[in-house]
Length: 97
Length: 479
Image 1 (tube, rainbow over the protein chains, first blue to last red):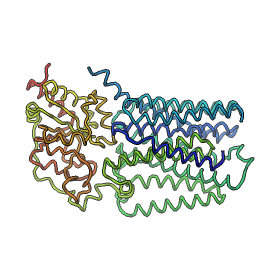
Image 2 (cartoon, rainbow over the protein chains, first blue to last red):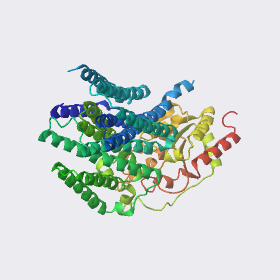
Image 3 (tube, rainbow over the protein chains, first blue to last red):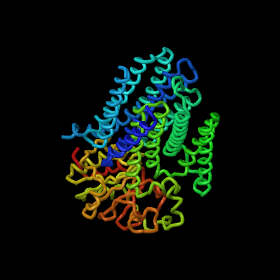
Image 4 (cartoon, rainbow over the protein chains, first blue to last red):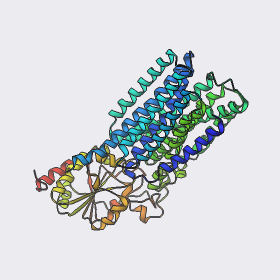
């Protein structure tokens, strides 16, 4: 991938992000922040790449593994906690008669 | 193009699409939960795509598998446990912690690549490419370190582990932060010049910068900071995407970065603060000392729970204003008991939710939803404000700054211009509060001095429990 096309990707990705969140009810600000936060853990892919390319370089393998751990802590925790919050909104209609 | 490349391309494209749909869906109540799962699915899909690509091309060595498994099990396990165990009231600091770890991950990737250049990248080595590589490594480290230390400080401050040191409120802090900033720039330039060891300087000074920038910010503004740091962690991920040459990482990181910025802006608007004053203004209470904000209360009326119950019984329409104090006391369930009784007596009960009630926008809605409060009873500020004059009783529970009439009347107040709930328009206002301490902004609340306001002192949960007892004695609500 050439650098210029990566810059295009960056630009278009940013524009997409700006457009996606137009109107959000305040109710959802916290879950949205938490969900977006989980997605920022996508850096786990970089950590995976590092581990795969490290071959038999032990220090690099360790750095990659720690990095992967941090990223997955972010991803897994983030999605679970968001789900927990959102579950409280969806539970009500069934409880209420 | 061979097959693994095509497969990875298709999977990446699909993952980006699903992530975008996920973020989009998270902004509607109905679709939010499914959207969150969709995003989680997209993330797992992207991992499958990446691993299958390497399996199909270079292969994955056995020791790589071992380290992948170790890292993922430990990280996921801790993440899942924390997410299940943490109380809903600590949501802001939990998000801060997760976020900081995302930043740390990007930092480590960049650091790893910088210290041990990955094989395979060197065959088409040229000056331009290596320059770009160094820039993206530096950005990833710089933003990642700020995200990490900033988030940890934010979390510690919200948890009450860290207070705001006095010196951070003086002008000295700007000087200190400028020094850190300049030092990071020097380290960055030195790094591009080929001096690899200055990478450690970059790590250290950008970490210090993250601390120095976050430490002076007061508790009231912390949600804005967390949201901004969330945006940073997206930027850090995008920078890491440049480091390892991954379009998917760049797109997803950029999306989160941009979306985080929008959310930060929305939060600032809700609190009538500009981002600049949040970041560089220090905490609100420090600004208010010179203004009329600080002052003695002259006309406080306090009353017993019994009087409060009598007034409630006679009311037709009651508005509840919940604040963070309610959440701290874990009283949302007890509150629900009280309102159930009132409803059984035919009294109309509505909850007025200020946009920043609790500690983050939407935080209060989550807490009340946890206590089974019907969604329809939660009214947003703009909807509920015209109703106050026709309201008999307003019950303020642990909210303070958001019901301060100063924001409307006193142009010298630091709160002036902040949208507030017009509770003073109601016939009677009860403020349930532990003592006379100020809210997050540290500013005196003129509401407490008004003749139609009565203070009920005590812990929110205890007062509400007593209230249930009193209401029972009055025969409000069956059983």
